[in-house]
Structure formats: C-alpha cells, structure tokens
Length: 190
Image (tube, rainbow, N blue to C red; front, side):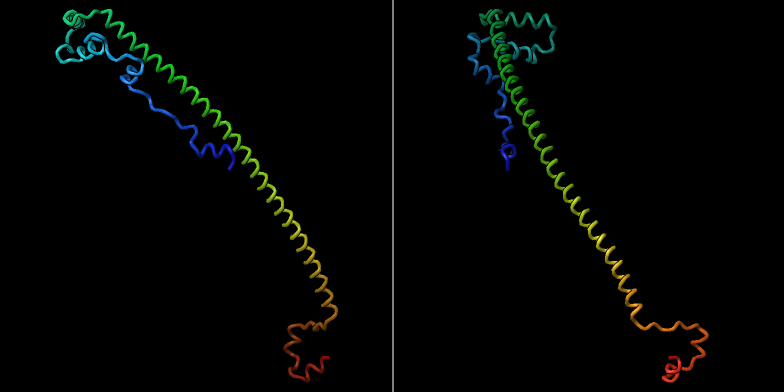
C-alpha cells in the first residue's frame, strides 16, 4: 500500500471537531451573563412570552423599557451585551469558516492526488492489458501459421501415400453389379 492509500485508509480528511452551541461560545468568550438581570437574553425571553408575543411592536417596546426600568438596567447595557454576543458569534464563525476552508482545500488536494494516482494505476494496468492482448495475438498468429504449414504437410503426405499405395480401379456402378463375386472374380480382375 502506498503512502496516499495509507493516508486515505486512516481517514485523514475527516472533520476533527463539532461546532459549539451559542451558550458554549458565550462562555468560551467570557460572556457569562449580563451584570444586571436583564441582558439581551432576558429581553429575548420576554418577547417570546405568551403575555407579550402577540402584542403590537409599540406595546412590546414599552413593555421591554418598563421591565428594564424596574430592574434598574439601561438600554445601553442590553445593547452592549447584544454587541458582545454578536461579536463572539461572528469571531467564532470566522474561525470556523477558516478551519472549513483549510479542511476543504486539504480534501481538494487529496482528491487531486487520488485522481492522479488512479490515472497512473489505470494507465499501468491498461498497458499490461494491451501487452497481454498483443502477446495473445502473436501466439494466435504463430499457431495459425503453424496450422497452415501443418495442412500443407498433411496434403503432401496424403499425395505421397496416394502414389505409394494400391489404388482400387474405379468401378462404374454397372460393372460392380455384373462382376462375379468371390475369390475367383477378384483374381480375374487382377
């Protein structure tokens, strides 16, 4: 097995890691939770609540601002939390995109090497097949030539045998019926 085949057998082009969840990304980025009780996640939860979900946009906005006031949080704190989270997600995505691009490039290079190896191996075996077919054709031609020579030799032998041996006198069909049978008849013919 060559190096490329061994590499392919090892599964070297398999992805190495799974993607993180958003919460894992926030924790890895140091964004645990907003200092106040009302970070952007709390606002998202509020907007999904059955109590506000179907209200108009203006009523939702008023409800969010009232909740922030009650919690002594500011809109700026919520927006900063949102910006940090968006930045963490964007940075993680950029890193993952870079890893994916490198992974894809490695696989494209490996596929090109595999394709080149397949073509080289295919060419090698095609040449072996052609050689075998050529050898068979040469042997067939030699056998056919020998068979033709043997046929000529058999004809010469048959001619010689025909001249050396006794040949029966050709009989006409009427002579065969009129001729007497038995040992006397054959002696008379000779």
